Length: 85
Image 1 (cartoon, one colour):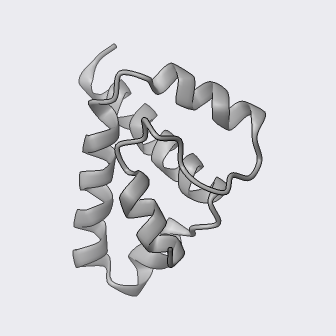
Image 2 (image 1 turned 45 degrees about the horizontal axis):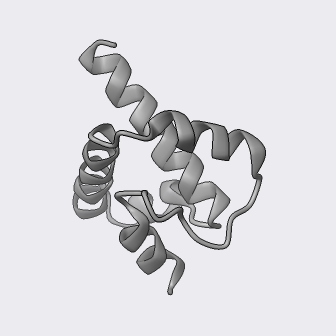
């Protein structure tokens, strides 16, 4: 998989995980595009280094909502913080 395809997939996975946790990344980034946009990009980059993207993709296909990110998620702590947890 090429770099841009990997980043696009990672962006989709970050957005999907956030959505399943009730986090609206679009709203968060719109509130402060410069600072939050950088944080979002770091989340995408962390996701791109995950060895379990296939598992994450499967989980997201199976679950419309989640109570928490899976333990393997490299953005679990960030997403929990964004949820207010």
